[in-house]
Image (tube, rainbow, N blue to C red):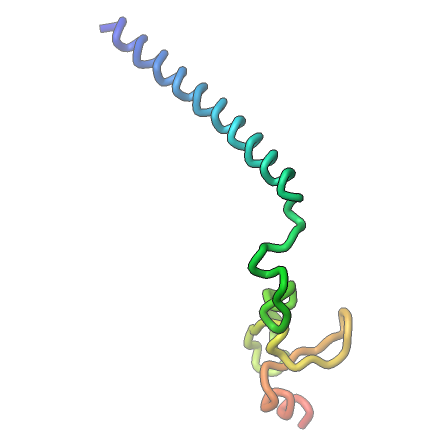
Amino acid sequence: MIRYLLITIFSLLALTFFRAIMGVVQKAVVNEVKSAMGGEDQPAPSQAGKSGPTAGPAATTLRKCVTCGTYKPEGAMIRYGSGDKAVFFCSADCEKKANA
């Protein structure tokens, strides 16, 4: 009985060790492939030639409308100002409400 218990414990330890080693090897291979492809900073091939509201970081940055509190992508908002003092409106109606 003790013999089977020891074999089970040893098997679990060996399996855990093997999985840890495979995880390290996998990370090394992934990092090597990324560096061979030019790193993470390169745009994805599907985004390389695109332009317009869906390309770039502004398309994924959500901004809050100062009038109604709705969140929308920055490219779809009406913007006044620049930098940290920029004000965003989700629609012309909200812009009119704020200026009224």
